[in-house]
Length: 552
Image (cartoon, rainbow, N blue to C red; front, side, top):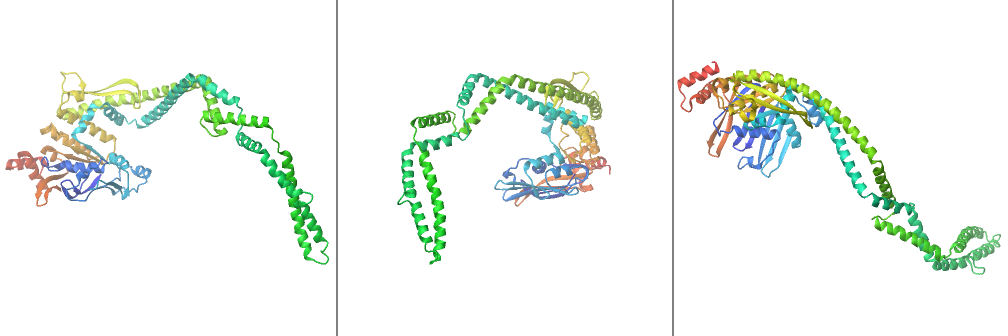
């Protein structure tokens, strides 16, 4: 329930801070006084798009804030899902707009994205304005009404899950068909590519090994020359380092007895001799291994040329990349060969899901049909009470192909009298009749959905007198079910039945035009309703009539 509304610097409103009450309340005021401005501010709180032009001229920022009592509406899970603090007794929603065009939204002082604000707003307030009457032209709205009153949420959720799976499988089936068809058209080329790569007998790591061998054989003479020189320097008979080290160690060993320090030097020379002797043996072995074979080099380079050609052709720079392409080609060829089996399996899965969707859709049709018959009875009773004694209201449910909402096409049919045939309600009902139809539907929906606040913006268009009073009684009844109902009205019959009465008026000040909203006392209500009855010149008869309407 909306407890308090605060508006600062929004269009013609300087500051508005007003308490609102449970039950049925009414808002009155002359055309252009600012009632639509207040609705616009509430709309921003519900997640509508913001426009910096809405900021009062001369102000840098506007703020709209509302306090809600959510203690009876089971909304804690929504707050938990969106990581917001939940205060059931005083939930605060705030929207701020700056002249620079920035917009921020807060729930209990936690910044939230506009999508979350909008989703929350849909759970808090239903604003029914005249343009919402156009919803009667839309079949999805008519179907949603039937679903709400059929209380088929669980069954509809099950159907949505099945239908989502069906769509996913159908998409996979179509994509596989397209892939197989595309591959079949290229099958010969794919087979040629696969055969070419298979025939190459590629081995991961082969390229690096061949490149090393090619480099070694290409420079064999330089390598042999370097190894020969190194071998001679290490192992030459007279001047080789190994021989000279051995001679040096032997010479020092002869004086160890008279020169003890020679022992350590000898040990170090022995160690160096062992290391260099080992190196010399490896150099000698490498020298014998290096051999230039023109035929082998040609074979290696030919193999490398083949690898390089394949890499250029398939746009990769490694054998690993070629092997990946080969594996992908093999898979595509396997899909072509086994495609019929896979297609059949997917088709069977789709058929099975289609049947399950059909069965669940039939369950929904049954629930909707049963609910439709009850809605027809209730609507007839409500519309008769609203001054249409010969009204006929029917809900036509006809079969369609499976859609996300099932396999039902729902259409509301209407006739205000017994002499005309039933026709789609939006095509034949007058403005006043549509207002009464929508109010009756909203009253029925409100009993099925716990929505904290419902605002009717001139739902009374096209009606007057006793019919207006009956409409007010319906809104009054809606307000007794732990619900807050607010009606913006121009009719005194409706205004008189509100438990609380607010007036919106426009005032000219030195700073410009401002709109204000105040809660009226009992005597102020008498004056307001008398003025609604007789105009600006309030007569004693109008005052008496106002008191009679107010039952005071």
